[in-house]
Length: 128
Image (cartoon, rainbow, N blue to C red; front, side, top):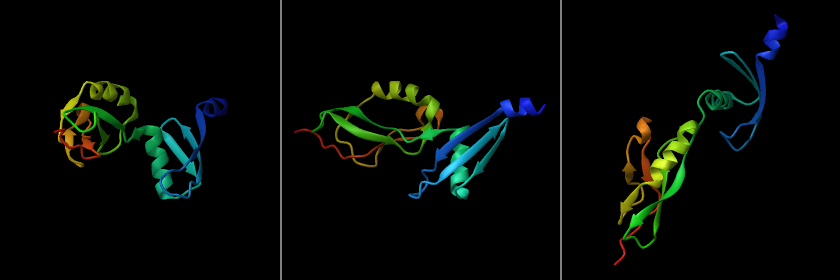
């Protein structure tokens, strides 16, 4: 029995990115339990989220019609599920927006049904 328990465990070493300290975290994952050593409570929360549901803020650019620049930079309003990023990028590559676009404007809401919006990060004026 102990041999099987040993095989079902997974050991990871991670660096916490929640704050500038960059603490080393030792993680033991077995079945549905995650045990974290090192760091603080924020680091423990970060590790559990990273292992169970990794998410990332996605940044990219979109084509823009009649803008002073050919592309407008955008980002997701909050972290997006990592496993759905390729699908998101395929969708975003099909979008084209019209100038002008103001920083902070929401271009698309509820991306792929995840409750995350797409936000402009730089004002692009209309070409005259």
